[in-house]
Length: 355
Ligand SMILES: *Cc1c(COP(=O)(O)O)cnc(C)c1O
Image 1 (cartoon, protein in one colour):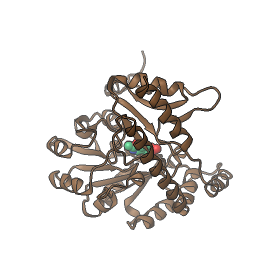
Image 2 (tube, rainbow, N blue to C red; image 1 turned 135 degrees about the vertical axis):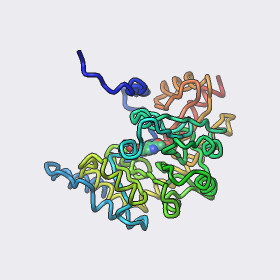
Image 3 (cartoon, rainbow, N blue to C red; image 1 turned 90 degrees about the vertical axis):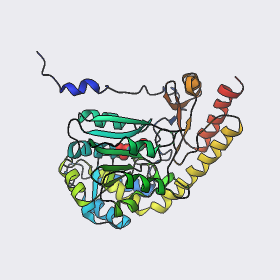
């Protein structure tokens, strides 16, 4: 007889999306995880090597220097900042700190794939509200909030569609939702957002004590491999999240790299500006060839290809372009280096225009 895992885990898929296959000669481009195409800056790498010299020491239980630096950078009290091994680590803390079995969690769909997993592991009920034309339908989401709703997850800009809502729309949403409902604002891509009226979660958190903002060093700062993300929330919420954190969950190398990245933020953000320009140019090139691409405020593009998605993903893969396939729905393509983006245009032209 084998010890039985919690029955609720039967509803959690052992979900490993099939990654695209890389070419054996190393000429493939990784465009399926929304990674930054550029490696860490030299000054960041230097800190990484220095931190590795003391890898035999435990890091702090909570990284005090990083919390202090983030608090100063954002103009918020240190008590309100929480860190975790990536934003996904903080989602686990949210599940443990905030969700009881039977609670409802409202989120849009399609959105970040962690949401259904977080909800199900907590034995909460996932209430999925369809996007409208690829965009969060905040009115429909507010309408689905019930007395059983414990939390709402808002991904802005949204993964996988790349679309964003406006600050005024989130304000209206917050006005329509009881203040007892936790509203998690996932801003993993906010540094790539350029639209007027773009959402600023930290600004919202200052006026709404039920808002928890999540940000990450994985995308704009290019540290996905080191696993460090952070949240900002009212001290009652941040204290609860800290209680549920894995002690020493953010390792010392990640802490030093994140601190070094904050010091060279100007340089990193100049790189982000380049990615944003490349994104807009790539979308224009594709749209100019008659290929449908949603407007994007992120470092990736969404192609709503429906049933053609599988065929197109296979064509891209054969061309050494590793995209993320959503079977029957579309393809999500990370904006890569200019070389990768040029190959994307050619490959999609072959697959969709000349075919
Ligand atoms: C990439 C991403 C994150 C970041 O996850 P980390 O665990 O911080 O690497 C968070 N939310 C969304 C929607 C993402 O796409």
